[in-house]
Length: 184
Image (cartoon, rainbow, N blue to C red; front, side, top):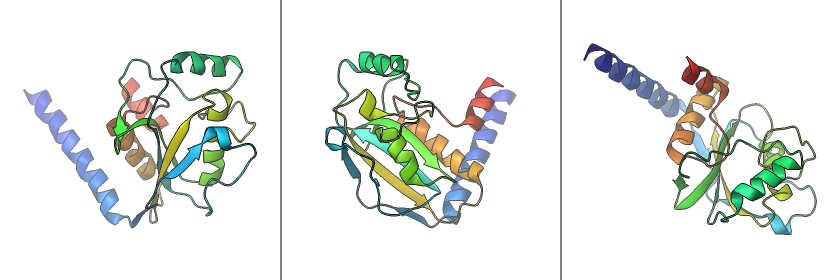
């Protein structure tokens, strides 16, 4: 019983820590999703019209095709470093749509990262979605949440990990710090 009590105490402390981070933030969310139809994108372009960092983003879709595993495997076979496929867990939801991916940008410009996910970058070795190169008819929505006062990338990573746990995206993995703790 003592171990269970200690674990509950640790979980409560972690929850209070995250709530403290969120209370210090002046969080700005983009009031509408960015709609992207992969079939209509032919050349590199800005996904959003502002340059910013300290963002958590959630990528969703209404439909995941039945042959998604084959499409994913074909994309990997072409040499694209596509984010990890989470086949052993059920895909979660965000605002009623299937969650594809949860990520964050603490230092790099969000436009650069979103271009990688959409497939408008030729960086095959960068782990991202690269959608245009394997899920060629994807229709996605990108939700952005900007945190104005975050000065510590660990704080942003903690929030991203919680969103990842809640949304259960079918692609990608938790941040590096979380994976370290899960191994210990």
